[in-house]
Length: 189
Image 1 (cartoon, rainbow, N blue to C red):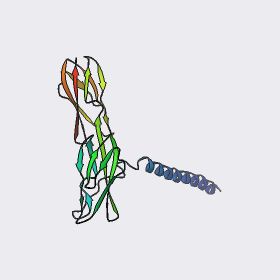
Image 2: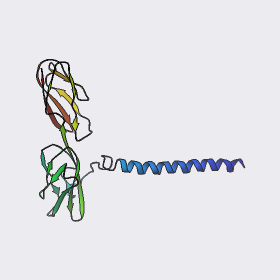
Image 3: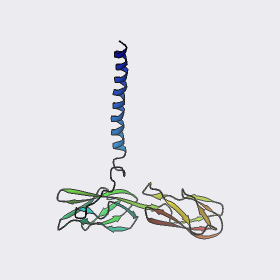
Image 4: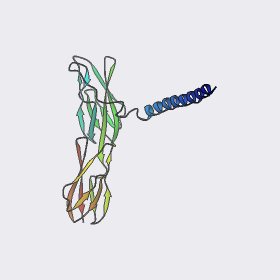
């Protein structure tokens, strides 16, 4: 009689555990559907059909030539968000505004994807008085950024982009994101 009563609580815990796992999996799938978890760079074979880039970072206003490695195939391109990034019939990608979009290349009923991040800095030029602070931000991505001041006697910047005016003069604040560099001209009065 003891063994039967022990099985019921065990089975109810097992059912609850399975239901929690299923709900967690569905939730994570919808939350991270377009994240890097599901769109990792895959290994490309030398003669397989693939894009020259799978993850692209563009500065607002910049362009990049996307191409498909395939032999004598007709390719059509389109963007999932033409407000952020557009593409022409030749595969040239244009970064219009900050955000994320996917460029899809269709080749013989096969779709090849390239994720495009268009990034920009929230201020291109800035004037601060000595002792004042301002928070610079990178728009368009949540990737880790490294900040640097060209003249620490004029202004300093911390790892979160908070600029502090130290002395009078002019300096540049540089931020590097995924190999791309943005800058803000800072004048301290």
